[in-house]
Amino acid sequence: MKVIKAGLRPDAEIPEFGRMEITVIERPLREVLMGGLHPVSLTRSTGNYWDASDLAEAVAERLNAEDHILPGLKEFGHCASVSAPSQEKCYPYAAGDTTKDGALDALKANAEELYFIDELSYPGLIEIARRRLRGIWNGAIAHQLLTNKLPGFNDQRRFLKEKGVSATFKTWRDLACFGLGESLSVDDFEHDDKLLVNIGIPGTVNFRRPGALGSFTNAEGIVSLVPRIDRFDMRIPAPGVESVHVHSHNSVRYLCLLKDGAIRFIPDLPLGESAQCREMARAISQEVALGRGKYCFSLEIEEVEKLLPRSKLLFPELNYVKGCGKSQTSASIRPNLMVPGYTVGTLATAKMHNYSLAELLSAHGEKVSGTKAEMLERLVGAIVKLYGKSRRKLDDYFRGGFIKLPERIRGGEPFAPPILDAGLRNNVLAIYVLKHLRGSRILSPDWENSAYTVEDLARALLAQRVSADGLFVRAV
Image (cartoon, rainbow, N blue to C red; front, top):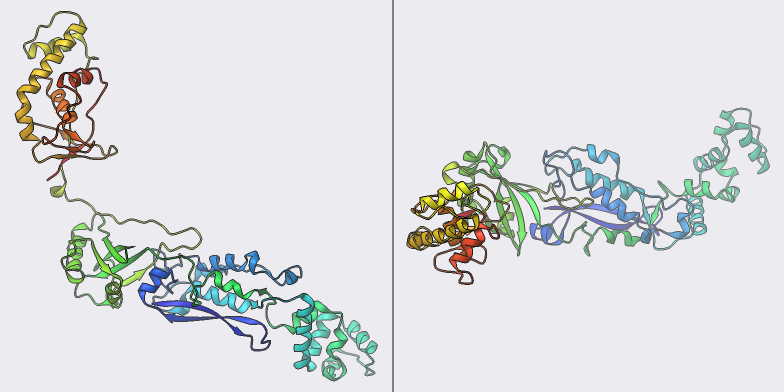
């Protein structure tokens, strides 16, 4: 994979100054992921056009850190802040074409703008500028210094007279044709420090310490702003599809997660395309990871790298400013594959009207007269009797076990064991669930809680001091 290497080389004209040199080199996928190396041309957004990494902004932030500024030059404006070029966000990507990589171009722009040196004072900078100007002195340099110092014709003519030049200057042409390089020297501008620096130092006079590069590169000088890369996208074509023809209709997009040195592939099976996507996902799984999963599978990093020539790899969530995103894949469930869920249903409680309590008592052959408290106590007895009669059928119904799902999951249909339903079946079911629910999750007749009696639970359920709410699914 292509990555960026940033190093320093001596400036061609002022060797004591360093210049940032940007090159693109190849590194294996394992190094990119485990070392957090920035992948060239692959940090595109979901639409495959714009850079999503904000690499240039992150690098600029590090270059502007106070640790990398030279105090002796800052007050003179020669440690100015750098910023990500605005056109970075307008550069379209072309897969594999590094000339169309906005983040890389922004880094190259920073490289052209900055000089690097460990320490330098402003007088030292002026002396370097003087030395260079002496080395390249000619008429053009002298004319440039004179014109920048004194833009007006009369001012230039007066300056030359003061320097002992006896020639007569009547027009601009006279000045342009005069041999200024022979009549003037660098010393004639000895008090024009800013002018000497601006003309004597090529390009933008902006400095940083060499250690600035280490803030966004690893020990080898490769651009790396995160410890490792744990997530990326890969679009794998269906068997038989050539890499040059890969698109959304003949391939499957996978969310790839790095964990324990291996890559977990999770397919995106969107609603409306699930049938076709599932078929392709199964075929891809059989081709690249036989026996490791029907839809999801894991591969070693080197196995993933072998897929790259015919698959498309992207890092759309890799962002060095906002942090990495957490996108997810989706999958729809076919109706014939839905797992049914069950609930206990509505219970008889003490809040019921007396006439409703009387109907329940009558249905179970109990006396219906008396105070409400007496009626509720008789109802407790009816529930206990029904529980005893139904125990074997309940054991058979719940054989194999059920699992209680997290509280946030709703829905389901009532349990339907083959027992008498005369208004108290759900209370009996609730007692059974409470006595046979192990660890708040597993419902099984093979385990029973003896801390409370059936009568205690019947009374507590009527008073609504306990409940058996929740959604259950069969364990097998």
